[in-house]
Length: 298
Image: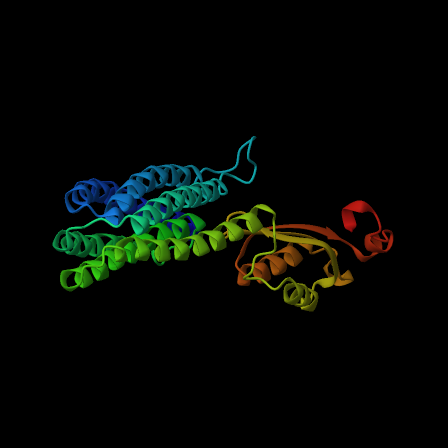
């Protein structure tokens, strides 16, 4: 429980840090983009304001996810953090459409930009967003991963602006600015797809990738207390907290020590990173009375 609390607290701090940096820098970007006449900077400024909104909502949902179970959500609010990840991903998709549209216009009708101003803003952008990236890089929640994509998009965007600015100091290539923006947007869209796919799998209660369920079953059968197991189900609430339910048929010598048998199963599950385990025990005689063809046992 302490580990889960520490992870939630760390995620909240990381999201708060990213939110504040994004909002402040979005204002700086907007002013700088207007001065330099750079579509990459102006589009990124608008995008960052959207980021700030989505980060604020993600931060709120991350805080909500700390709530424990109640009569409405018996497992607690852990999955609310996934909503933050989905919301951020949707904002990224909308922002990507805007950036591609503006970039294509600039490719068809190139406009002169202030290369020196672009360089200055690019350096500031790399430093500010780079600091935020380092902060959330080690985050393990899907919320933090979605934020990481946001921030990496910004860092790559500013690197592109820096490259374009340096080149245009020596050669007049105004199309370079929007062209780089399109390539960065494609990279972001690929990663947004991967993150959304991962979230959808969680919502569909797929077995966590970190656990091989067949090996888990094999290890459970090797326990001294286990005669057999059935009706085993494994899923994850949010990618961090895994849930396991199973029927355990205990050996004869453990029929009066079911609490010990349950503890053995829980310790094994903990070694797989499974934090919530529900076990229904049965004796061998009870097991023989059931052929497991009924719907609950399938």
